[in-house]
Length: 143
Image 1 (tube, rainbow, N blue to C red):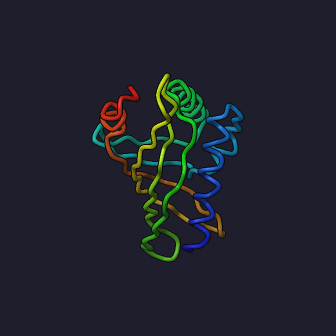
Image 2: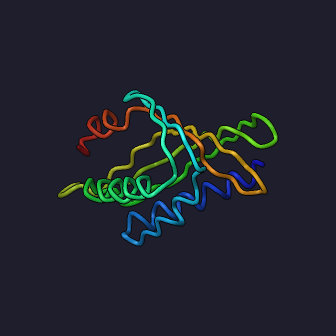
Image 3: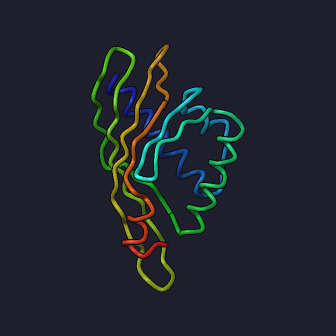
């Protein structure tokens, strides 16, 4: 399971970076997610469905990231904690690279904990827990 989850997040990062570059295939991005998902952060807990509304939200999210100067998302590490034969928590350590006008690029490290289900050898995210993205971006002067 660990190898397939690590490869899955390499693909996840690759699709994220393609989307940052404006080369978005929302069907392929949506294929990373289960039919339903949950998300938790200091802003609250939400649930959603993998449908056209999710794809539209992702298009808007990538546009927001580009407008903030997000250039690239890099994975520093993927830790996998199995729950059972089909589920795990993937602790992904990310580094986001931001362009800033008249200043050097800045790298910001953060972690997201993803709930992953693997059925028929295919991992999919069905949830995630993240920190306070807005506070982190404010702290570093991105927003």
